[in-house]
Image 1 (cartoon, rainbow, N blue to C red):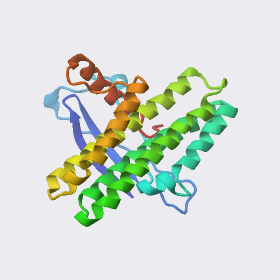
Image 2 (image 1 turned 90 degrees about the vertical axis):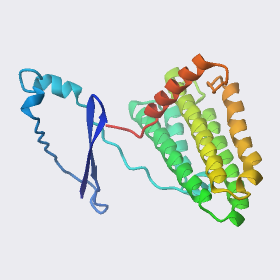
Image 3 (image 1 turned 120 degrees about the vertical axis):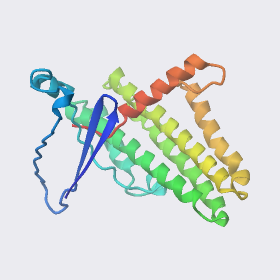
Image 4 (image 1 turned 180 degrees about the horizontal axis):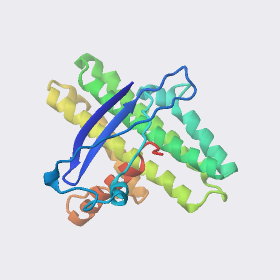
Length: 256
């Protein structure tokens, strides 16, 4: 089944999003797609003013895989956690840094971060809509699970900290680490805002615990020389916004 969504991306471009649901029982799914675009003559866009070569040069095509669904608990402690695939790709890369293993390392790293981002979003939504009596253990688990996840990812550094791994590949790991820290910080703030908006005693009772999560990540980023927001540093904060956008684009699930 194919789903389509056409929208204006910005003042200079349009976006056509097409979703294709593959058949699970088929090992290989093939499909083709033709697009016809009708442009009014009044826009003065034709083969003389806009060549075929220019059109294809301006067009960008990406294929993005749908992120698998995991709850935060299963990422942190589950037997089938994406960490298993991540660690396997790290070990293969360290032993044999071939092109295939480099590609798999990049894929698994990006997929893990994409899964984590989705899981955090769903977890925050779940907590903010839960009963106040359930908040104690839900927020306690949120803190412990995010700590387990960050510790596990950062411990993988030991696997690739070997002579066979290039400086560039090490940098990819660090970019992922920074992105993970930013993502956890962002969704923790979302959780705090959600509880505050919800009312009741949830925000007041759990503000300190959630603030500790944010504080720990900020402290870690400062230790690793990752940029953090500073109240009196306007230039640095502008650069941070740009870097956040860059990291977001770098961590998108593999596009072919």
